Every structure is written in structure tokens, then in C-alpha cells.
Amino acid sequence: QAGASNPLTLVLILPTEIVPKPLTPVLQWAEEKNCFVTCKPMGSETLKEYIALTLAVPSTAVPEALNDYIDALAAGNPTYVAEILLELLKEGAIKMLEDSPRRCMIVTEEGQDPMARLETVTIASWVHTTMVG
Image (cartoon, rainbow, N blue to C red; front, side, top):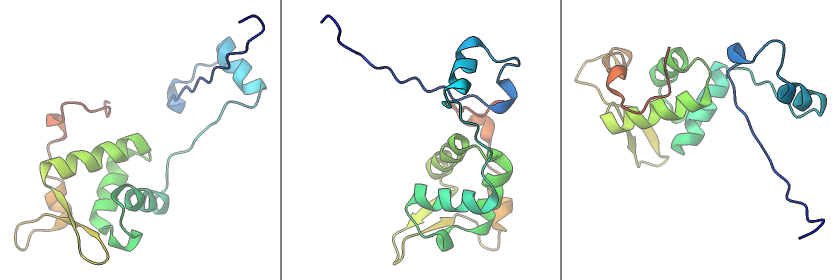
């Protein structure tokens, strides 16, 4: 139709370290229009809340060892956090307990330290990982 408007929304998500300097014309335009958002990595407390929301559990039901493990591995990147949780669930390193309230548990051998268990996970075996580097 003549005069019809077809708005387009474009979202680019780039790690800070690969944002070109100087900015490309498109990124410069986005910055000038206040459409350029810089995100910082999640801190430990925000990470715990994100894990809890992703697993649909209270934040008190997220094991500290799991939070510490993901904090070290994900470098504050929410995409990595979701991927790590999915892989840990698929691998059986963590499982959900449908208690009241619902909670997450690290699956360990009797007497095994939870962090030691998580450190046995072979990340290299994750076929569809975005965590490269």
C-alpha cells in the first residue's frame, strides 16, 4: 500500500569486547538515537536470582556450589547461565526436587563435595555450546 509504514525492530547483542571502535555507522546511529544499550555482566546475587527464576525455585533453593560454579563459568552472561543449567540437567549433575518449596539439588556420590561433582562435568562434550573461548 502506498504510504504504509512497516516498522522494523533490530536487536544486536554483542559482547563488549567485540563492539567495533570506532562504531560502525549503524551502531553510531543507534547510539545517537539512545537505542544503544550497554549491559554489564551479572554479579553473584543477580546471578542467583536469575538461576532461581530460570529453574522456577526460590533463590534460597539454589545451592551455593551451583551458584559459584555457574558464576565462574558463565562470566555473568545470561545466555551461558541458561545453557549451563540445561546441560547440567541433561547430564544429571543437577536435578529438580518437587518438594514444597520446589528446589534444585546437585547430584553427588555419598560424601562427595558438591563443587567437586560439578567440576567433573565435561563441558567439551556439550555439542551445541555457545561458550567458546
